[in-house]
Length: 286
Image (cartoon, rainbow, N blue to C red; front, top):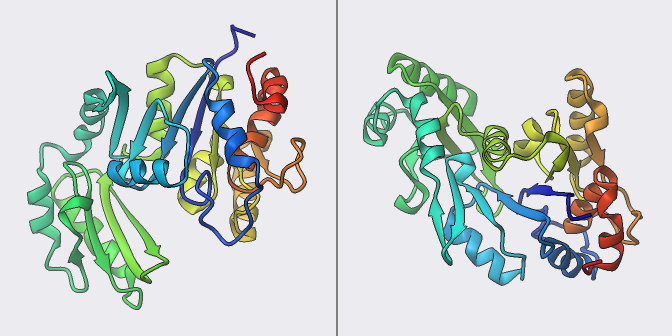
C-alpha cells in the first residue's frame, strides 16, 4: 500500500463546502479530513476563490489543509512550504505567454469603456486576472464578443468567462490567459509532481468544472449537482470518448453516506482507487 499515491483535486463551493441546498451527511467532512491526512494523499483545492477566501473557508468549515491551491479561476497556483503559502512562479511563467507582454493595466484600458462593465474590487484582481461586474439583464454574449474582439486586436490569447453571483444576483466577467484553466492547472500539477493519470481523481459540482469532469482524468460529479449538469457531463464525456472516466455520485453510496459534497468526493476515490478502500472504510491508517 505504501506504493499507492493519490493526487486528489477538488472544487470547493458545493463540493467540499456544504453550502448548497442539499443535506450533508453528518460523517462526511470528518471522514474526508481523516482520509486526507494519509501520507499517500496529496490534496489540491481548485477554486474560483482568492487565497484569503480559501483560508477563511478552511477555518469556517473545518476542512483539511491542502498541499496545493489553484485559486482565482486558475490564475494562481500556490504550494504550502515552510509553514506558508508560496506562489509557484513556474505557473505564472506558463500562463504569462498568452498575454504577449501586455499588462493588466493595458487590458483594463482596452475594455473598461464597454457599456455595462464595472471593474471589480482590487482584491479580486491579479496580474493575470481582470474582473468586471455586468448586470444580469445585460446582453452578456454581445459584451463578451466585443471584449474578445478587442483582446484579439491586442494580440492577447484570453478566455472571457461569464458566471453569476447567486447571492447578489450580479454577473461576473473574468478575463484570463487562455492557459489559465482548472484543467490546465491540474495537468501542470500532475506533471510537476510526477503523478500518473490513473493516480489522479478530480471532484466538482458545476458548469465551470465541466472541462475537467469530461476530460481524460478520473472525475466524480457530486450527487448534489444539478440534473442539468449531470446530463451535460454524461453527454460531453461520451462525445469526448471516455465516459468510463466520469462517475456520477449516488445516494446511497458504498460508504454508507449520501454522495453529497465531500461524501461524493470520497465515493469517487472508492470507485477509481480500490487500493484505498480499506482506508476509506476505517478512516484510519492501516
